[in-house]
Length: 239
Image (tube, rainbow, N blue to C red; front, side, top):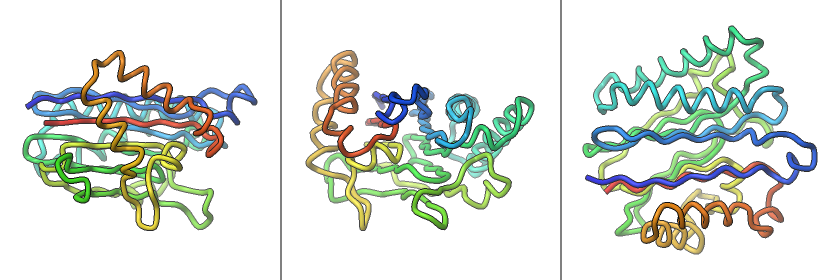
């Protein structure tokens, strides 16, 4: 069983013009039987959301790597990891200053565990049949521009989890900035004119070439014309 991954985060044009740091963060860690990947999008209205998103992805990946098995306790370990970050952040200041979403997947030879708070998008694909896919959609608030964060009092009621069978060996995690051009909506589904060529290229080149290509893709002026938000995309292949 081999696993490969690449990821990239690019600061949006609105943040660059206002000298605001990229508020997205991602992390991938290898486990003995697969990978754990997390992506987080910090809220633009929160002062230290870039810190919150980085702490969230790093801590959740670290905790799940300690016991990566897909047993009945895996769901509880995800919750415990989020609680750990909330406790750390609360010692630094108001939780609302660190608002961030969470997209994550734990891959294993027996299957996969998907976990999700707020917006962003997670897509699992059978690489032998792109018509066979599974999606964890964004959850927005009462208004289109609002969503849910791990720092909210009722965060646990917005933590969505699902198990996916082993045939979904290919995974994409993306912030809502990247999802605006990387996936189709109504219903959400992978774009064979974007995600398929991205996958085909990344799966056949070395890591350095793939990283450069992914960075360039997210930095392309055509994507800036679609969204001014930060853009993050993580590609995982567990085969």
